[in-house]
Image 1 (cartoon, rainbow, N blue to C red):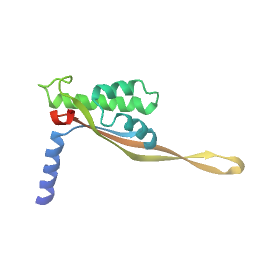
Image 2 (image 1 turned 90 degrees about the vertical axis):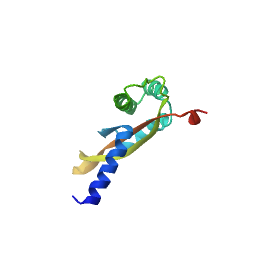
Image 3 (image 1 turned 45 degrees about the horizontal axis):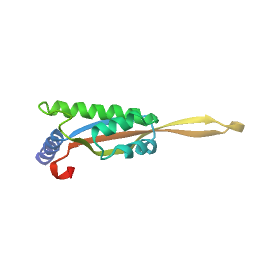
Image 4 (image 1 turned 180 degrees about the vertical axis):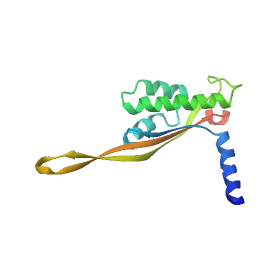
Amino acid sequence: MGKRKRLSAEKRKEQRSTQNYAVLRNSPVSARKMRLVADLVRGKDVETALNMLTYTHKDAALRLKKLLLSAIANWEQKNENSELSVSNLYIKSVAVDGGRTLKRISPRAQGRAFRVRKRSNHVTINLDTKTEEQQN
């Protein structure tokens, strides 16, 4: 590995150590369905988002809630001296990208076969704390 690549990799690693995030890969829900739920909680406080996800009747909400709890646990691990209730933690961004697609075949009439695409997605949640200026 060259010096330039090593330095850029170290810079990226340094930036990641200051961010509070969690990633869910290959969730077996289509990205379009997951984005509907992600749009509900984007920019909300963590406690409000957890309540919304608990009472949303979609399969994607359960997966997103579990991911949000993981992101909160990651935040607590990095900030051992802070308390969650005092910190004004909110969801900074939620990114939902398409994952791999499993291709299956469904039999149809007269010997034909139709393709069934089972889609998946990747979700990334970034958390941040609100400053005094952002709260107003």
